[in-house]
Image 1 (tube, helix red, strand yellow):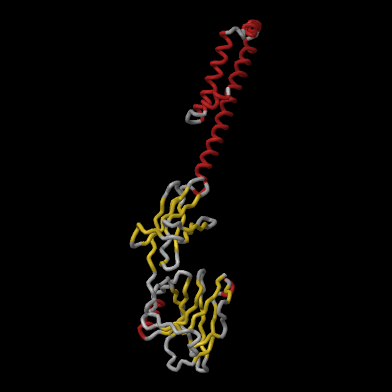
Image 2 (cartoon, helix red, strand yellow):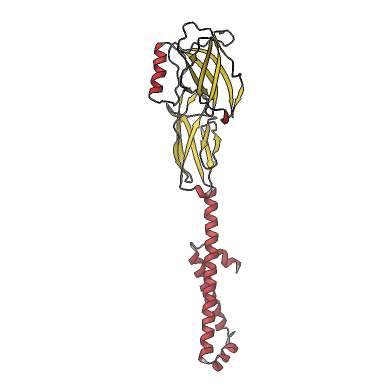
Length: 306
């Protein structure tokens, strides 16, 4: 009997399996009849009334119907479970490459898949990564992105949770900040920060922050606050630093997003000031990758963002 069941499960679909069992029962009953196993039982049917005989027929058909329904239900549950297990083992493949050369994979890039519980993976030596997704997310679209120090952050793209689906993500190398004329913070004494320590921890409740300090800059040229994240991207803050006649300065509304690690105080010339002002007027708060020419970093404060 066990061998018959194993053989029956090779049939595709639940109805085929149920039909196989039903036909097997009919064959078994026919075989028993041919052997005379039911002769004594049949001899007793001559004494049955029509109503009694009809009741027996109803009982036999009812039992057969119940058996078929149970087989269908059990087979359906087994198939649904197998289907969910297959989807559970579904894999989404990611290839992170240099945008200028798709054959050049980027090793150790961070890949983030924004499921309800975000998942993070890192690429191998060939730029590949993979995610296993659960059954309930199959067929749905979720955002995915990749990042690595030295490369510009690309725009998140949609990924369909489909087994074997491959997503290609191209990253562009960050522009080297050759125009920076950084002054060592230990040498520059014209501009100091009084209310924020290097390495200070900043929490969500602290944002936006206000920073104050002292200066001895005579011409009081334009100084702007520019944030830098882990990947070398810059983010302009508004308004620019406000100088006071008593030798103090103040910067307000500094919005420290996640991933920010350095607060720069950038001194710019007329062209640099115009560049920053135009970004403010156009409400461009997205990342940029190179400072204006002739920019001078007066002071840099490293922070820890929590």
